[in-house]
Length: 306
Length: 306
Image 1: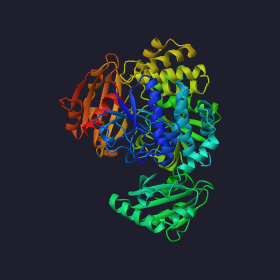
Image 2 (image 1 turned 30 degrees about the vertical axis):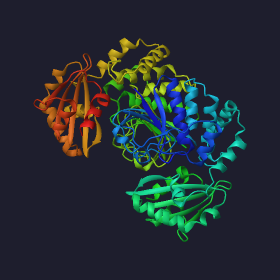
Image 3 (image 1 turned 90 degrees about the vertical axis):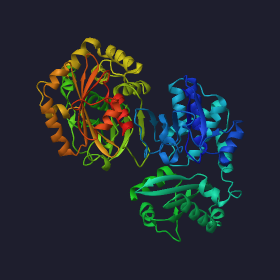
Image 4 (image 1 turned 180 degrees about the horizontal axis):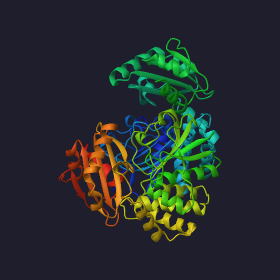
């Protein structure tokens, strides 16, 4: 029976690549799996796909009309998944995030590890199952790991991520350091984007303390260039929050060169944000030195403060 | 930093053994992990521990006073775990059940597969990590797999479970068929137990449709012997339900020789039970031919009916 595999909404490079990699692995093991996506590729992912001459996956909005069973990669929380996730059975999850708002009625395959990238885990699964990674897929997978770990600068990086990139680089024949920096810069081309695009491109929703918290991350090489557009960004956030019922919106603007984040907070409760990061908001903003990871450095303290 | 690992409340053989096996593996890999239990061994587990000259694990009621981090085996749902589970961080889960009522604030190691027994998965992890299973532990692990799969008669049994038992039997030097039947019969010594013991020995709680559903399973070689005590069992169930706030109590009495279950239903809503199994209750009872697995044949249809 055919299954679909996909990463989270607002797909980043890992969400797209991990789906492709897991579909390839499952098909090699005798499955009938198609990788799809819950959105179109972002600038960085477009650069990656073009670099390795790979097509973008088909974009789906619903899945229950075409399959009964699905596999999730790079996410598990229902609000980050396909809209009709409740109408299908999840048979497999491969992920590297916390587990929340996820429930099944039957046992399933679930493999998560606290590493920097889903593609790192999938590379392990290729090895465990003694399936070779084709050169093109190796290039895609190392791109995903470099993207998620910001070329090993993120504190989410583990030795397993570095090892995977090095082994995959040999298979793909890629100088990963030169290529990786080029790729990350391609993803920070912000000037061409509207404010609405900026605040939605890498945004995820979380349920915390009964509130809907939306957290977006924008990578840049120049914080001031982004905050020159602060007023317009605020308006866009207020508009999106009103339209979608977000109580609290955190915009993380992260400088990938020096690994610092400036936070812009719109909505309530703001005191919870101050408590979470032990900062005083100044005009709704705060500097978070050394913070680059939403998953490891923003969600857990915020969750705890709620 | 020291961690504790434990299986679910009302431990069965897998809950006790999987904790011991996972602790052994983690310690071999450089961890500092102690296997404990959320209750004393049942008759079957006592037989197993005595047979392999192994001590019962220390029983704990709370864990947060002695550790900050824990590992769960053979369960994930909070109501089946230690009472103060919310006060500690779960770093590892190895399980073979559905995922529900489980939430973390940070990424973790989570490995689940839809196989018959947690010890089967842990045996795979020994292999992946190239750690040898000592003979005594092999005997314990094959006991857990035979217990959970009712010597491969349960529909939860997979080829991986059978293969694991065969390989472990070689390591332990055990004739698993003869030993397994003897072990299962040791677990069905019901005459010596009070009604309260019978309805609690292997009981688990589930949240379904806002109701607290309690499902107990009693294995026997003679259904009529158990139902000769029906009136006393009903009184015990009513008393326990009132004391603990169970809305609905399902007592599965399973004949392990012919793999059939007779169900006794106390509490409400009973119509959901009739819908779930497509049966008409007769004096609150129903025959469920071929049903031996709570996890695979009782929880999913009940969940669906709710």
